[in-house]
Image: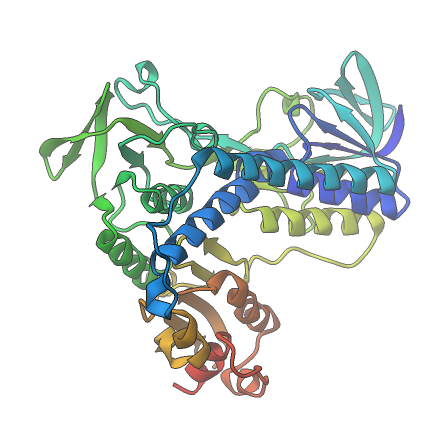
Length: 449
C-alpha cells in the first residue's frame, strides 16, 4: 500500500493525470467512488453532446429541402433509441479509459477515499478498510449540481442534468431555471424534439460571462425557434405544474409539466478528509498556485475543485501541470486561452478576453468582426443564419479574444486560442495560411476586416 502518488477522483483531471504519472514511472493509485470518467464522461459532456448530435441530425432532416434534398415524410425520432445510443457511447468511452489506465499500470480502487492524516512524511488515504501511504496527493473531486433555495422545490419532482439525460418520456412543457451553458444545451435538445421550452435567467443575458453580442444573437435565434426567455427574472416558488417568477416587482406564473434546475455547479471540498491536511480553501474551491500546488507542498489539486472554469479541458491541463511539477518538468498553468463552447445549433464559442471584461477594467482594445457568411464554405453549408466572428485586439496589436457564433465554432475556436496563448499580433496571424474553402478562413478574413 505504498505509492508515489494517490489521486482522489477519476474524472478528466484524475484519469488523465493517473495515466501520465504511471507512464512516467510514478507508482500511482486512483480512487473513484462512482464511475471512472467522472461527471463529464458519465453525466455531462459526452452524453449531452451525443443527445445534441441526434437533435442536430433531426434539425438537418427537417431543413433538407433547403439543400435540394426531399424527404417524402416528416422526419421522426425515437427517444428510446436516442437515449440508448447515448448510453452505448458512454460505455464505449469509459471502457477505453479503463483500458488506458490498466495499460499504464495504474492501480484503480473503486470506493470512497478519505484522507486520514500524515505519518512519517507520508499522506494517508483510507478506502474500503485499507490504508494507502503516498508521497504526493492529487485531489480531483470535481463538482456537484448547485440546488437553489427555491420555495417548493424540495417537494417537486424536478430534473437536474442527470435526470434529464435519462428521460424516457418527453414533457409537453419544460421550464429551465438557469440560462447558462448547461441550461441552453438542454433547451436546444428539447426544443428540437418539439417540447415547449421556457428559460428563466436572473442575469440580463444568457450564458453568463461569455461574449454578450454572440450570446444575444444565439438567444434571438432560439426565440425564433419558439423558446421563451425571461431575463433578469427570479424564480420565487415552484409547485406541481407551475413556476412562479418575479421581474421588477411583477409576479407571474409559467405553466410547466417539468422543471430542469441548471443554475451552476459547486466544487466538492467536503466529506473526504481535506481538513486533516494544511490545505487552504477559498469560497469557490481549493487555493492553488501556478503549479497546481495547494498550501500543502505535497498536495495538488486539479479540475473543478480549483473553482476556475469547471471545464473538462481546463481540468486535463491542470492535471498535466501538477504531474509535470511532481516529475520536475518545467511547466505552469495559464488561463489566458481557455476555450468555452456551447454545443447548441448553431454553436457558440469563445476564448480569451471579452469586451465586457476589458470595459470593466478600463483597458483599451479594438474589435474586428465579420459575419461567418464571409466564408464561402459556411454559406455552402448553412442556409439559415449569418453567424459572427469577432476578434478582440489589445493595445499591442495582439489577439486577446475571439468569439464566434455558427457551426462549427467548437472546432474553430482552438485556432484563435493558439494565437492568444502564443501572443500573435494581427500581422503575425495574417501570415498563417488557411486552407480554402474552409469555414476557418473566416478568421483570416476577419483579420483583414
